[in-house]
Length: 165
Image 1 (tube, one colour):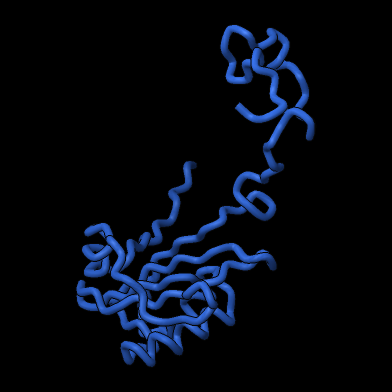
Image 2: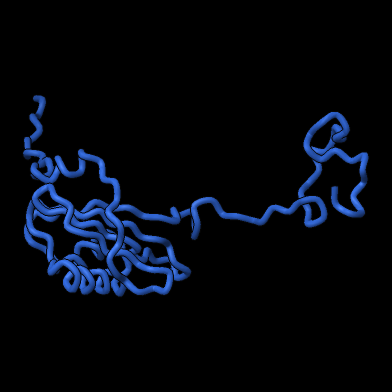
């Protein structure tokens, strides 16, 4: 027990906890909890995931930016993928799984990008703690992601509505 603490106190909800303890407002004196906003900045999730599947060859940075990731980190990821794997663009049928983290500015900075071509893992670009991008570990990817790369995205055929007369 902590020095100075009342040996008869029971703060775990047991028999000695006062009945009105749950109704007492939390203050700095009776709580060690910090104020936390669920989901991060303005209720947004701390992490963002996106599956990138281009319909035609497209630069990695452009795909990332279009998916809501921050522009500078998208460019750094593209440059690293080109250096490590000689990949600057994804071609039709390729896929990538991007993960970003919400930063202090409210933007999603890319922290990892796993690249797949012809249903085979190519490599991962990951951001180290020092902020530099390099080679990352192979993530566990659901088979459905790879299977989906063989099929074009579903398209809805335009069907005019019939008018009732």
